[in-house]
Length: 159
Image (cartoon, rainbow, N blue to C red; front, top):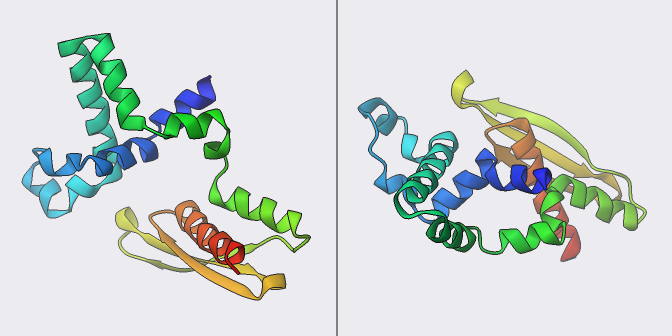
């Protein structure tokens, strides 16, 4: 159960929820945060979702909060129950390649741009046996790897 909970309340998931309901446009932020795009920053969005859920609980109680959270999370509960949501794109790609008896992917950072506090990573994912190269971009090396792996898996499955 703790793995389920951790997956549901991690910053990335909370930020996704905030984006889905466009919570960022309702946030009151200081001028500095507004200028730097704070209403789009994952950490701010995740904190805002937690705050809204907490406020809902304090104002309306557990029953309304429970039904709201269940509606907000939607299919994520089902995906957790069948275990699919625990597998990230890189893991899914590796499992697919192993099942096809192909060599595992080679991921490497090809470029890093931006200021140290707002870096963007570009990662290349090579699948030598399939003569495939996909790129991913993200705010961390891991996120960029995940995006590249997701693209590679999609390309392989639709080939």
